[in-house]
Length: 244
Length: 263
Image (tube, rainbow over all chains, first blue to last red; front, side, top):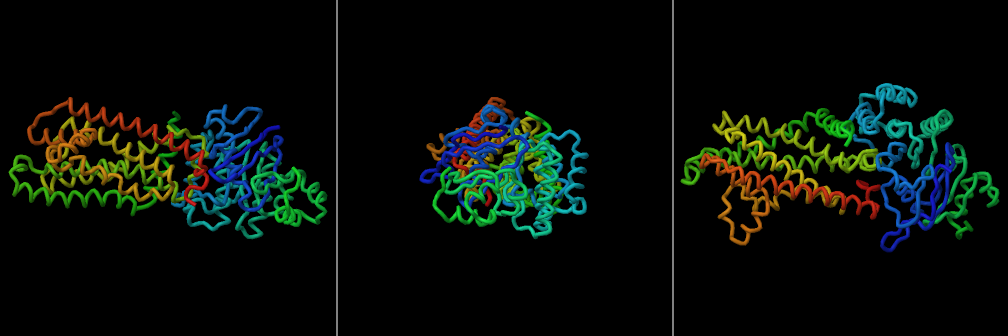
């Protein structure tokens, strides 16, 4: 297993955000992280990104505890994109990619920016300030930033939230293509069930900080006797906790 | 430390400045206004005070040095706040950059921002008021070094507060320097303060810096021991500031505030 999460918990004063979760992701596979708002998805991703210190438990990457890596060593191998975080608005798209490319120590930065901007079709607004872009354009720039270092592990938090169906489909198709061409392990948190079905090899469902179900999309839909993932999600989100 | 990464983060702030004329004007505007304001006050005091009759522009020199401290500190805070305002905080802290490199980058960029404001202001003061801060000679460099270290320290303490308390600590960022200004004896000698406050004030590098500045300008004597004392105290505070920053960062990881800072 490339990523292993063992007995991971995060407790704040009176709140248990994540309660003793266990899961793993095989190399070059995509795992979907599903659950209602406040179920602990963002906290789990935050712990894997090293932004939140777990109360207990272990995060292993390539069989090594994340704490045993030097901070910059592990962070250079991963990346993250979310519509809830942004790139500096007053910098142009090119300047942002240049700054982040340098921060990630990319060798042929010019070539990499050229390559990724062509793939994501962002060249025509390269000289515009990031804050002036539409949400679809910002989303693609954010994705470009998250792929600038060719990460081995990519965390995506609702990558198509607030996008129109056309751009949403473009982004999903791009992620799919990118994944098939490159060696990348993906953890995708999303509320878009079609997206999850399209992109994920397996999923875990979280609720109240706990994992309440796991498996492939087909397995979970079948297990709960529903027609699609959306119906299954609603059943799990509204019902009592299922066995883990 | 990786110089490339320090440069990358500095570049982010340099692009921010170079992309916006109002930002450049803002950097120069306030120090220049200070020069005009204190220049006229200084001129008035020079004509009407026995104490200042020997040295034209002693207050103006103090104003320029204090403004340098202010600009360094505010620049450090501003650059950190920019990351919060632009909701770029998470992107920055998941990039493979060490905390020491972030501090180094903000420290280096802060002096650049401060100099963009201070140099034109210091030059304007020469023809306008006949006052040159450069008359302090070589000791000026040491006094600036001490002010720079202390300004960065204040920046570190404020950013630590931002990490600990979140963006609501922003107002403290603006007010931080004014807390210390009365004790810093910037425009008046130490013995103006009550004895009890003199004791506290001596624990700050500002008193030693500005007392020495007056000593040079009034008596034309340089006391390198006092300058050394000012730099030593500044270094001590700087180290303390770095430790507090690291502790605050670790605390923010425990509280989980790094992931939603700015939201």
